[in-house]
Image (cartoon, rainbow, N blue to C red; front, side, top):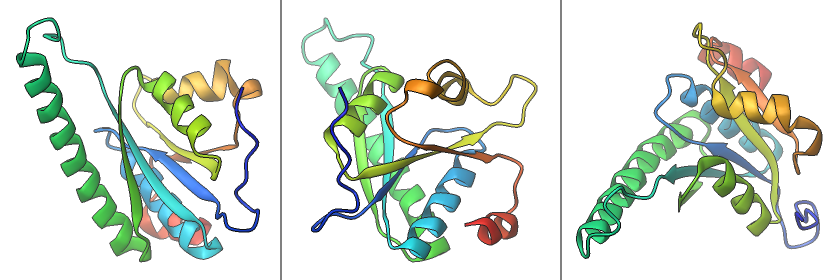
Length: 164
């Protein structure tokens, strides 16, 4: 059960959450969320999920692989956060979790009662909008715990700025 959102209560601020990955369209979601957060006085959180290493059963190797994956994820988030800062002057909270992306996304929302909006970008390729967008907008849209904004992946910076 998802906790009651407290985004607009005294001592809290709404937070826009963006799932960061290596997709081409991810920067569209980050720009939209950053610009919108700056406009309405919300916070920005950038989430990336790393998958558990394949060699977890080997002592030491699994720990090293996990540390390397987390360091790479944090470095990627730092680069994305710099783009958000350049686009809108907002500082982003960086969140790295380990596990299955959809499960960790729900867990992150459950644990942070200030998250008020999930921002995703839809891919423009022939394969469709992407697995997370498909899952959330399709199968679980009616039961998802917070609103979801899906940014079309083909929008330009100027178009996003005019919408956000």
